Length: 262
Image (tube, rainbow, N blue to C red; front, side, top):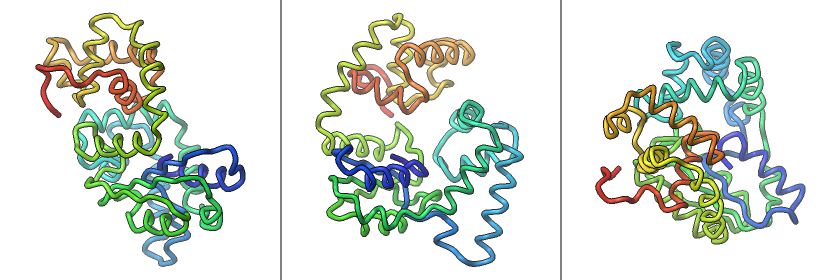
């Protein structure tokens, strides 16, 4: 569970210990910004972020998106920045985004974290600007017997082309051995419905190529690539690019010879 979903997962496990066998927490925290800081500068920063969110949520050309991308994915390309705009528009309204941010700022699940009894894996990017790694260490100190993994990355949302992404997958698979066994069945059920062109595009998505690179490799326009990707996501049941990458790699895609290493 990542970022603001993490505290919800922690609270759920604390309340229903028998319903969760293993817990993976990525890039998350036990206490929100308002619980960490009590200084005027930080209060002002939080207020400015809320104002920017209200004005610029889902707007590609607004300064807010630049700020958001620089925090969540500083290593991303222009294509990644555009995808943030699309995801924000699809996810929720500006008003709800502000409301969720406020709730996140006030979150405090430290007591619940102490009650987590299932095996827990905490993974965090070393230079994460959204959730400082110090907060991950605080969380690790609260959950008894948890395993803590630090990734060499600046991206809160990891890029498929960086080594940290591969390590994240490796750590999660080792921690959740049954997940790999399920992956092939899910992927096989979905990939059978793809056309050869759609499978070719999914292959390159699994390699970590962005839309522009895929278009260049296949001699297509970016608009055509986007249309293909929308159909691919519908067929494999992926809500976003990261989910598509995971499902494609579980199905054995992303390692074909002749494609550029990412």
